[in-house]
Image (cartoon, rainbow, N blue to C red; front, side, top):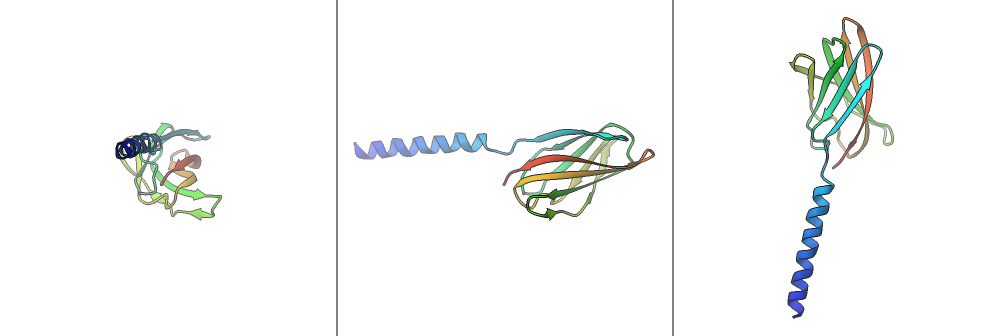
Length: 128
């Protein structure tokens, strides 16, 4: 009887951990920012410390070049700027290690085009 109670308890704990783990999984980040020259939507499909990509979609303006960098003000961390490639018109993809640790990051998007240069900033919560 005691072994069956222990077995049921272990299964119950495993189910709870599975459900909690799934709900705490990194959710995609999608945030928009509007400046004087450009407007963008930023998508981080997998906001984790394991690298990944930051997609920048132009909502208005015509950018020839886009670069992405990140700063974690609370910890004093910053990452080097990564030039984004343009796989489709108005859609830029920056790939590389932007988030070396979990926490709240400020993502800077530097856009340059006929209207001039502008830097837009969005916030993203990155999980481990």
